[in-house]
Length: 200
Image 1 (cartoon, rainbow, N blue to C red):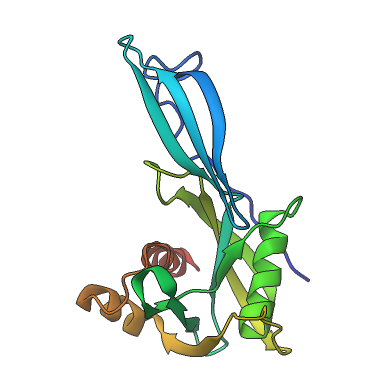
Image 2 (cartoon, helix red, strand yellow):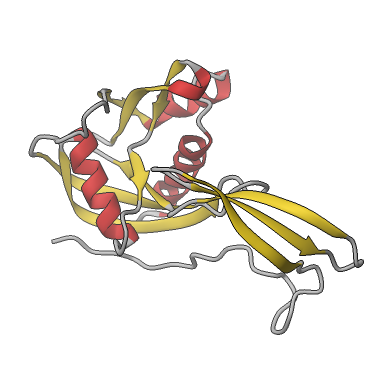
């Protein structure tokens, strides 16, 4: 049976305690500059705390989940996927965006099976982070999945993946050598290392 350990999903905050953040900007106008299948681009006019009026453009994203999945042999489930903007394949942990009305845990469970073919019996919430605060509101939640059972995947059309497993030490070495450069996977690897170090 799956279990979820909840945690703080707002690790940042205003940093000023209760009340209005003195650094907050006031939205004067807002419009959708681009409405695509995957995300929206918002164009806002804002007033800064010093009175300056400027423009803020950012990507409005539904949010995503990444799964650090461990096999019985304590190897990490990884995938190699071609990423079009950079025109090459990357090694990544399984991840995907939230569907409308979907909880992060349900998203992680769905994405893990769809992309890798695994189901997990045990789920622990490791944390959440904002990966592109200058131009996106995307938040990625990270889960540790254990007790894996292979049941077969169901990838979306056009989602061609190479799934494999590797020891965590190998993944950390690939990060150190620059072979793995995907930001979310780097964060997930170190959070996984921390979680395993704390385990009894």
